[in-house]
Length: 475
Image: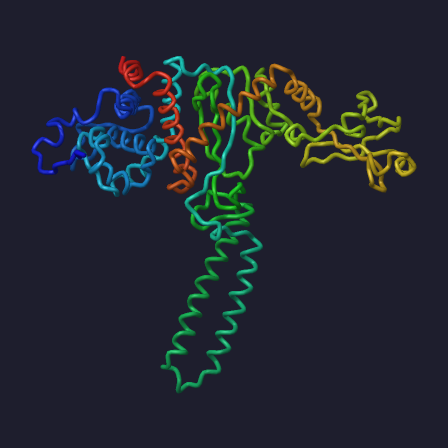
């Protein structure tokens, strides 16, 4: 059987022109055309061809390198540097430019805010190509690890506990030093104790600074590696990370907006994310949909007040808890008397107001009525009788509940998972993004914008094809 053998000494191993390295339908050409179509002035990157001094690398070429690299899992500056030497598509894209890893890292570090705006221009290009309609938006969040360890997260309790241990150790060292005879001053044991004493004092000073920062900033915790990250919980456990938010369009599942927040849950994010997406669209969407993690009546009301249909299930819907005969919904509310009437006809009068939870509390007028009721231990097992909480915005909550349960709303919500979960799955599974490389919210926003743009580019190439997309971008 014959074999095909290569010949490294062959004179014409590669085409004589770099332009011939990749075919006309290669995806790298679409990335090249996309970056050329961006408005760098709007991004905040100045391109001055008359700038004097040592010539630098073209900002467009550097952005092409980052965007194309992120799309194929090359995120570290050293891997990107290596790719410009050995990968034909990278060599073509850069025109044989070979920036070192320090140059690549510095470009990314110095252009955090411009990189965070790339997705916005990408979304508007998609609108021009009629790939984004902006009528229905799906919002979702996902946890990404920060470039910091959970062991570097400090709370007030941890600081106080650590200070006690340090002070105790300092006292022990001082007492040991006093017992050392003067003739032994030059021995290594005394020298080592003095060095440890100095280290402990330095550590104490650092912990005191962390405690002061927590008290002045009124924060529950801080991370000494990345002070802007937070403690997040996911299926992989508890770690230092960020909550990445995205707003996805219904038509093709393209990302309209992305954001990075330092909160462990999504409760306070709905209105802000929809507003940011509408700002990108330069119009108001007609429907805004999210999962039960965004169930916050005050937040949902902000969007509902603007005439946008809100489709968000309540926590009760998400838990699939079956209704019982003594659920809150079974109690009749009397608006004129501001009271509830239980299924047995007893009155629950207004008792107190919870300012923090923005709710009112209603209690049975006579606790003995509950104790003597045949449904005691079913309706309630409290000796004080049945209690009901009613939000100040309860009317809005009831409206949103009814709105979510409509058949057309159920169809939209069922469609939500197909669209909004896909981008995060692509980033985490296909691109192998398990953590951010940059620190701080500005850095993570820049990376999130690049990753979201990578997803949009992949979708655009799938929908239109490389030649058609290039034609539309260059026309």
